[in-house]
Length: 465
Ligand code: NAP
Image 1 (cartoon, protein in one colour):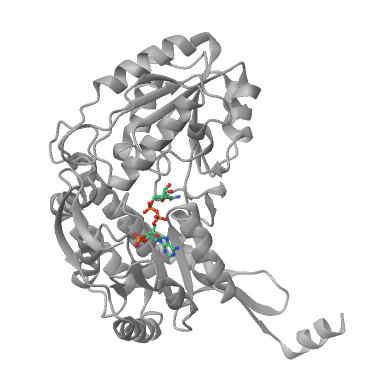
Image 2 (cartoon, protein in one colour):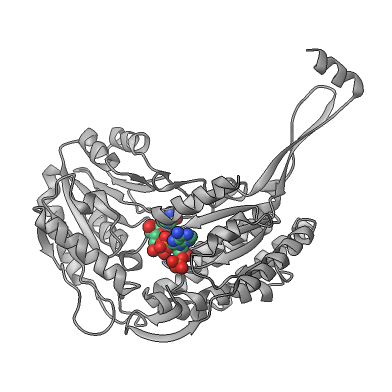
């Protein structure tokens, strides 16, 4: 895939970048490796000062960065500006809390000075997706840099300008040279970079295939990985739910980011008693979404990010209908320029339907019916993925049932799944492993080091035990 900006709203290729040569990659690895030796010894107050400054710049430049995101991958401009602001909050959060999360932990051991220290691993390779081109990178970089690691970003090939803007952001925030670098490369050189001794660990946010490939290569070289992969999040609505709020939130949860979010609600599981009413109301709200120019503040749904994504989505719709699904809305690409797809709703789906089994990346909702709590949980958990899950109910037993019974990394009751710097974020099953954000996230890329300073007499006694 060429490293290029192609405006998905028009299909126009705006610019293209040459890939780094092997020699250029090697130079950047050297720079990163050297920077890591210095950055790890830089006091945490200085490291968090850089992260805070990055947050301030993100906030000040939210419109500029927002326009860049919309230009390269087509999300509605309002959401893009909000994404830049959310990045700022994550920077502030880790600037405020990193020192506390990484403070030595004392261990109460007799006659010893014992503690657990959290030390940086070194150079971390971050392979990132285009769908939240700033947020995915910042939520890795803010804690990683605060912890004393050095970042190497291999961003998705269709968002090179965002990738370069983030590199410049950290430079302007005061990060010393080499602490955060962008590598303009495709996926092919990733294997060689992972094998390199100068790289300590890797994180990947993206598809199952990419995650499996990166993790297996990293595993071969005994390197830690965090994987944030796909999702097919369930959104359950029970009879006791606040109906209007549930319908409104359900549509927002499906439409977010033009439907291209790992934690977008994709499978809507509705109690039989309200299923017809819910489906009618949901279809009407999906129909009312404004599809169009993502630079317009009025737009709810912009284009899909690439022609291929639109083709894949339409293929899923076609296969689902061929297998017996009812098309309640949409189901076709928009005529004209750009990669637009109509908001689409499918019903009458078997558990084997492609839209129930595969991740759907676009404005495509699948609605199915559930008899009761247990049946809803059974359908929700019948997925290879386990990233997020939402359930709407006012019944206390059902709240407890869903909270404990849904198999996912993030459960939200009476709301929609969203990441928040204060809470760990990540999945189970094929949605990946490891966590980002919160104290758990910052500790993914540290050496959790046990230190025991014993009195010689104690050591003798311990050895005799
Ligand atoms: P993708 O095709 O897997 O690409 C993600 C990144 O991986 C890109 O930088 C891509 O580079 C690279 N890549 C692809 N194949 C690779 C390989 N074999 N070896 C090394 N690198 C490889 O995914 P995407 O289409 O950009 O993003 C959508 C996916 O990301 C969805 O499945 C979505 O659910 C998931 N996602 C998950 C989360 C989460 O937090 N769990 C968040 C956002 C997105 P190129 O662009 O050069 O191919």
